[in-house]
Image (tube, rainbow, N blue to C red; front, side):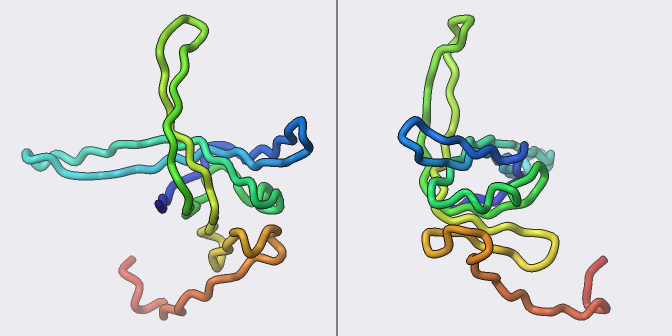
Length: 132
């Protein structure tokens, strides 16, 4: 599955008791549609994301950054301290593409450090062809 959204807070690298490291971050994904009445509705879903392949990407996963993620989704449920049932979405990320500030940069199983990541070339568009 692939999702595109904005990072909601700077990524955090956690070290587990067995010395493995994971990058944790959250992403907000907006979906906009029109109702039968023509009313525009925006729905936002939040995903807690984990990236186990390498930690070099963490400094680039900053609040507000647009990211495209590939991976798998899982659901979790728990009871909070007040006894209320809660649920959330986890996204187990296998590929990250950063957007904005130049060319997108990818991090995936083939490139575990951002310095080794592949750069995707974008087509140059003349300024006079831009719609704004």
